[in-house]
Amino acid sequence: MRHQIESDDIANIMASFADDAGSLGRATRAVVALPERVDKDNSRLIWLPRGKVVPIDTRDLGDLVYRFLRLTDSDEAILEFARKFGPLWICRRHDVAAYHPPTLFMPGALGPGPTGNDDMGLKPVFDYNCLPEKLKDGRWAESLGTWRRFSLRAKSVLAIAARLKAGKDISKEEWRAVDGFDWDWEKWGAWAYLADPWSRLAETLNWWLVIAQAQPFVTAHNNSLRTSIGIPRVSRHIPSVLSVIAVQLIFACQRQSDFVTCSGCGLVFLPKRRPVAGKQVGLYRARRNYCETCRGSVALRNAKADQMDRDRKIWSLAQQGNPVEKIARITKLDRARVEQRLRQIRARNGRIK
Image 1 (cartoon, rainbow, N blue to C red):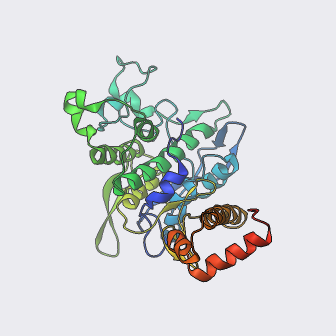
Image 2: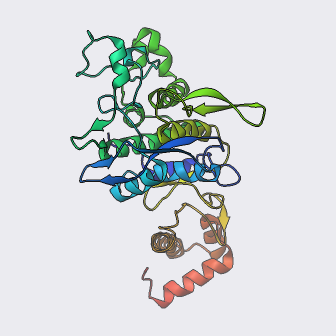
């Protein structure tokens, strides 16, 4: 599945997802099943089904989702993530949380559904034995490609939410990156409501809850009760970071703060400060946002390119005989700045660097 959303387009949308503290999602109580050791070979994560269930520090939740979005290109990053938060614990046939109920009984307009390898004549209880891939030496495994697909799909969900909040149209290719479908839903009877983009986004988020087997549950704490969403510590399911990601994606899509895409590398990132695109910064109005990696050389290169474009426009207007006041008005620069640029261009005999 190819990511279809262009970074420059998203950068102008300025989606709003992070809270005022710079966290993506919301502080919730969550636990994950963490193996004693996680390794990888050329194409898989590998671990022994032995370890412990550990809580996730609520301070790590925003960083968890942010890091998950960055896993599309780096196998080492996937390994580091899994060693801290555990594997996804998904079954090898359906890409659904292990020990899931039969796919025919899993609610969701967008799936999941049975695969070509499912024997529909088997008793439904057999599906509850749907486990991660088990190797001959007793270890379990997950494909790195599966991790990349989930990371890409999560990134696409946030990008689509950003587009919708900005009142933009979503193409069939962009929707395919989010849910795998490019159907004309208006022709599908009971599913016609999915032609509404907001309904389709809602069902996409429901899909994440279904495949992660996340659910509301109640626990006792200090002589009181508290409710959480995820996978209970004691259940038929393995507490997986996938359920945490699913819940945090839902919280993120309902945030009203700033979450942007880097104009350099195209990475969706959580900024440490408010996005600047569209705001006045010094003499100019900022056009782009950059992540920490691209804020240096890439930002400087683009700034120089912008300056050359402004110089060409200033010089062209001057060559047409326009006075400085008119050039300043057209370019939205102050008079002193226009005069300075003209002096420098004339000193180079009209050459634009």
